Image 1 (cartoon, rainbow, N blue to C red):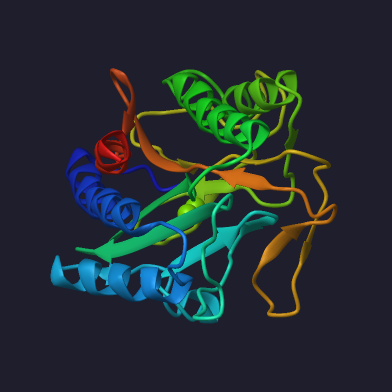
Image 2 (cartoon, protein in one colour; image 1 turned 120 degrees about the horizontal axis):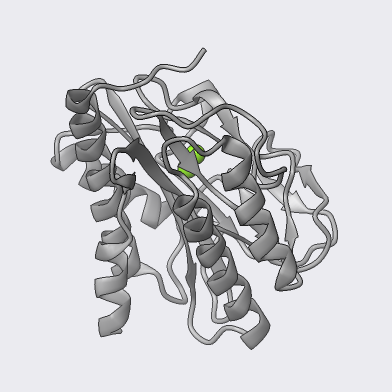
Length: 259
Ligand code: MG
Ligand code: MG
């Protein structure tokens, strides 16, 4: 069942998602060769708590950390570890959730570490673009399938593949609510988009084949062929003037533009 949010609830969701965006800005400052993913996680946790939020993923279905950090062939749900140290040429997806004032924020960004192969840079660019192609279709009167189709089309016409098993979702008082938001699908299918619908759109796009598997840790999702995968996510609200992006990459991009 879908919970449509009031304008007041959307403002609370915006606060949670803004804190996610600001946490990403802190991560952007720190991501470089030699940094362990557990260090990123610890700093994100402190930053969220210092700013009045709680880590949204910590303890969720037993997840042990604040961030999901997934490197190279890890698609999503990577567990931070002091043994995992960023190195030149890596790409690193950081997925961050915040719970504050009763509502969740959820957003992911894939960062480059040092010098990254040209084809992988293109993967990141196309994955981010495919997120925004989906957001463009998130307007009143369209259907969910219009979003899914737009994401898939952009990824596949650029020669990449779309992970099917992992999907976006409604966001609200729960981290994962209805409806599911697949990154593939048909135009004109699925629920009609109405004002107050809040969803996380989160393309997971692979350079090689789309097939994935779960690691023995019970969390980390990886590509079967071992090739890199990228992940970008925004939480958005469907509003009268189109999609209202509640999370933000501004803090990240301000830092990256200065690097
Ligand atoms: Mg997420
Ligand atoms: Mg999500």
